[in-house]
Image 1 (spheres, rainbow, N blue to C red):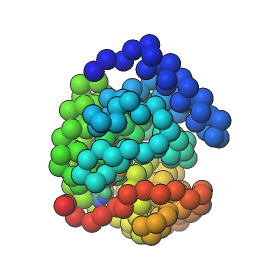
Image 2: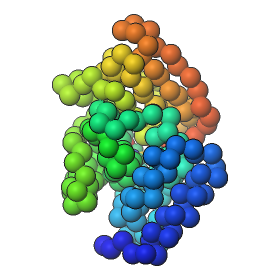
Image 3: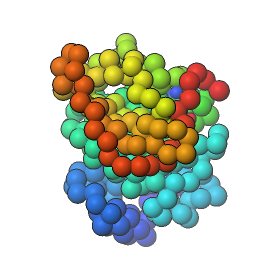
Image 4: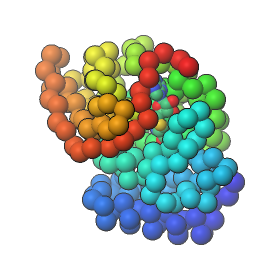
Length: 213
Ligand code: SAH
């Protein structure tokens, strides 16, 4: 697949559209400009890659809407070199955005086909993320604690095991709710025992499921 001037132009428009919807973090907008989203789309949907919409990626899952990716990434305050755990690799697009911003990314996916596809795509693009096949509900304690945790599927509650894998001062962003709608939730670990939880609007994600399919 190639990244043409036309694609770059479409990305510029997409970044401006996302900015007009309220995303202000220039580092996030710059990553949207740089990462070719059309590489992450299923064949039938490539022509829609620069629409601000979610699309199917197989296994009943979706690549998130670019605005949602940007919103979560902005809320996460991912700094360069910080260690980020992503739960729900999916297409790998969100992981690529974080890599592009200079984060050290660990990402978990419970669908084997998506895990394999995303791992080979990101490595072919030169991004050095670490991929895991498994249940992200458990996190990755052996690789933690993390500066940031980003969950890209809708959870019924904040998984206790994930909270405990945050460093003190660390931030987790997770959509929490039932299958029809979730509230974007930011959890900051203030001290060893104390967590500050804030809510940031409603979104719709595919569900965070336990175990492997
Ligand atoms: N971040 C993705 C969005 C994918 S949608 C992207 O940029 O494309 C959410 C993904 O979470 C799906 O691929 C789904 O299979 C995965 N998922 C759901 N529950 C999970 C769990 N417990 N552990 C790991 N991945 C999970």
